[in-house]
Length: 67
Image (cartoon, rainbow, N blue to C red; front, side, top):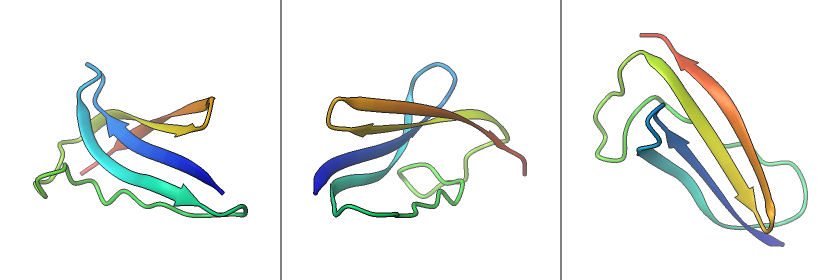
């Protein structure tokens, strides 16, 4: 079990939405971003980055949102 944070950022580094911030048990898990910002408004088309932090490990994935 480990605390995992998954968040989406815009290209300027501004936080768009936190998708997960909790402990996960070992195994496979899935988190889905529906293209909305934290306030529930739709995010515009463009490039975003998803960052996952688990303990001392960090991974970043480039996302392209097309509306």
